[in-house]
Length: 311
Ligand code: UDP
Ligand code: MG
Image (cartoon, helix red, strand yellow):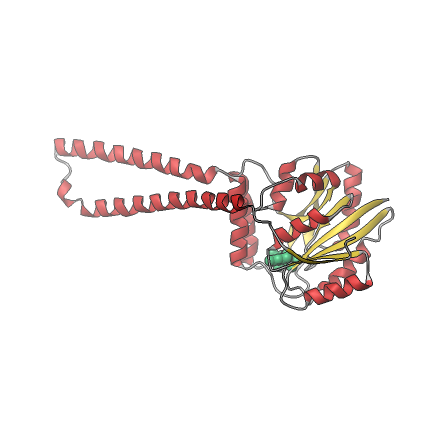
């Protein structure tokens, strides 16, 4: 008999929680598996918390961690992984975009391939805006180019992980977590499972542009030092341009093909251009300093307000 925890982050999902609960509950009736569901209430401001508490009251196989406020999707999943004591864990969204019915297939694949993790790769995504599809496609490819670690493309957090991965993940000390990247960075045997992602069952996305941007910048800054090389490359480019211009003007003076007095426009353009280059590179440095600042404060990633059904 193996134990399984299904980790479900929820932020204002009152319309779907009951449906999510019953579909996951049905999906984890698997022979030789004893399943638990861990809901993480990420500071919902709607009725999610009371629905989750009602579920906990009638089903002792459902656990609840409720945050003191909204900390975000990645901290919520982290809290789930930190608190699970099972042999296996599934990370799944509450909106049923990732079908819970795939869970038995993931476990079967893990066992058949003797793998430590089965990550789900989206073959198709139904009901997403063209902007989300396009930006996600572009971002994952860009990140793979920038990062020192190579990640599987078109893969979210929906995956099955075993105890080895759970323990190693729990040992990671960084606060800014890009979970799918970190799990892939851990190594071990990780195999893909291709599936079609459904549309959200109800409600709207809880990832507005601002959150998407902060998620993408955590991924980039924590997994790549390449943006720091930008200053060096731009510096070389500026030096080369300066050298070429210097040679051009010296020869121009000698052979009389330039008239330096009419250079007002070029001077203004050069000043503005390199002012921009300098600000940009200072900005990049600032982003990394910002991360150091966040990390050295050593604040916890999340604060738990209350828990249900944890022994
Ligand atoms: N979520 C969360 N905290 C947040 C935002 C989202 O716990 O601050 C949860 C949300 O309830 C859902 C999952 O993270 O279970 C993924 O969010 P969503 O489906 O809105 O993102 P999308 O699929 O649109 O990228
Ligand atoms: Mg979703």
